[in-house]
Amino acid sequence: MKAIVCTKYGPPEVLQLKEVEKPTPKNNQVLIKIFATAVTASDCIVRGFRLPIWHPMGLMMGLALGFKKPRQPILGIVFAGEVDARGKDVKLFKTGDQVFGWDLFPAFGTYAEYKCMPENGMLAIKPTNLNYDEAAAIPYGGLLALYFLKKGNIQRGQKTLIYGASGANGTSAVQLARHFGANVTGVCSTANMELVKSLGADSVIDYTQEDFTNSGELYDLIFDAVGKRKSPNLQYKRALRPNGRYISVDDGSPKLHCKDLIFLKELAETGKIKPVIDRRYPLEQMAEAHRYVDTGHKKGNVIITVGT
Ligand SMILES: NC(=O)c1ccc[n+]([C@@H]2O[C@H](COP(=O)([O-])OP(=O)(O)OC[C@H]3O[C@@H](n4cnc5c(N)ncnc54)[C@H](OP(=O)(O)O)[C@@H]3O)[C@@H](O)[C@H]2O)c1
Image 1: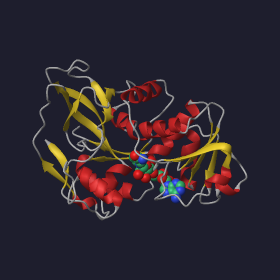
Image 2: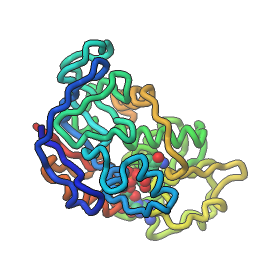
Image 3: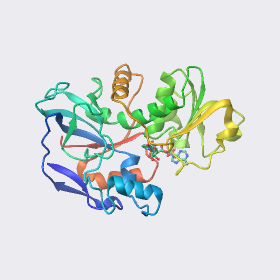
Image 4: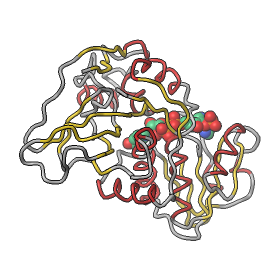
């Protein structure tokens, strides 16, 4: 099968199209024929891993992923596709089921035509109203935003600010916060204001024109969906109500649950959340897709179409 192999850590050019052996499912696994995957911010962090091993994060990542090159050389964590075959003990899925999901760190392997997953992994029937490209745009931002908004204990009627409302996390967070009944302010750059409004934000602040922490508005919940590496040093405390909470996408590793993936599927099917796709690239142009995501300014998701 065709796959994109990460030959070593480094710039996008380390990603190369190769013929590799098609995997065979174990007794408890399904073999998925992948039709779409996405290039996520996390994929780019792994590919470009450059932290020295004396750095605590560098040591941790090196131990988990491999020091010179990734032990699992096919990167990619989200996918949408079809069950192509199954192991003899599989009960939850049948051949031909249209599925979508996320393979838990550090398995990866979605930059390929086929991938095996345990039937009880982060895998669900895809939303019936979405095509494969659209379905692949749901799990990453959706699961992360859901995890962090729940961690922030989002409540109906709360004044909530999503910082970085136009990325994969941000576009999902705006829609989910609206679904939970919050009053949502999105912060993004000028070019993305219309997009963020169209996702249901009650108001939008252009961070190139205005620092929201100086406006005098106070919030019950502030979610930094961009992460500290890219966000300016937010003086967020002065924009919080007395019992307000600040959460950041960098605050620890999320615990993801399959029931949340099913919850997102149901929200997609009822039109409560919509996939946001910036660009599509064929598998062969993976390096180019990574180059674009490396800019840190994608809108929602960058989708890779596979084997169609
Ligand atoms: N904690 C964890 O376990 C975990 C897991 C996965 C991911 N993450 C983190 O989640 C973060 C976000 O992921 P993502 O996929 O949503 O990223 P993304 O899609 O690449 O985010 C891009 C968005 O960020 C916005 N942005 C860039 N610089 C900004 C700034 N200075 N101020 C405001 N907005 C800015 C851009 O908007 P403009 O173009 O308008 O500037 C763009 O729309 C990553 O940093 C990743 O490391 C954490």
